[in-house]
Image 1 (cartoon, helix red, strand yellow):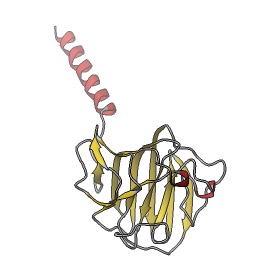
Image 2: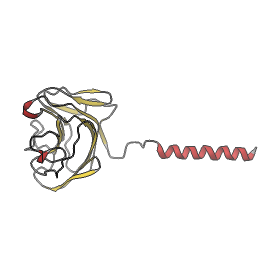
Image 3: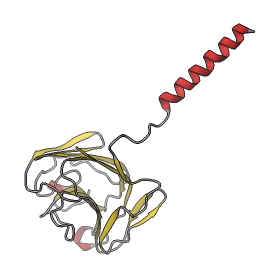
Image 4: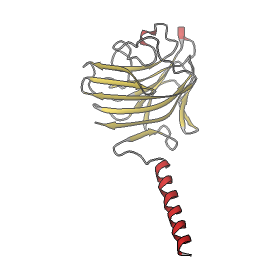
Length: 205
């Protein structure tokens, strides 16, 4: 009886330990989650006419001439993680350290691009437009879920796409500002493909 009880307790402890190992960890300390399954658009200011909407644990845009979701807070040194789904025709990106939150553009912020069909692929998916070209062949994001991991510390910006470092640059044009998620037009002004943001979180460094 005692032996059987000891075996049962040992088995329960082993199961508990295994469950602890495979359970999804809680939120990391210091991270601010701006998009996940429980959050809509309350963390963002809208700019432009893109039809941003929350649904299915994500935020989606798939029509309009173009627009942005702009973070309500400003950031200087930070790490940003974002999960997104795009089509090959999608024109999107993450604009960081925006100097003017009312007029987002590649001339007043660092645009980490998502655009597999960009006419000039030099600054296609994974590049920082105008500052850090992408090595060829350009990574493609269309038709699947992808992850950006962006670290901005001082003048150094490192961009990792799907676990591969695609940009490591030193540049001091823009030091601080909000960041923005883009929905843009396609080639020649044609409607762009949809962009879906499933999880976006940021931590100040």
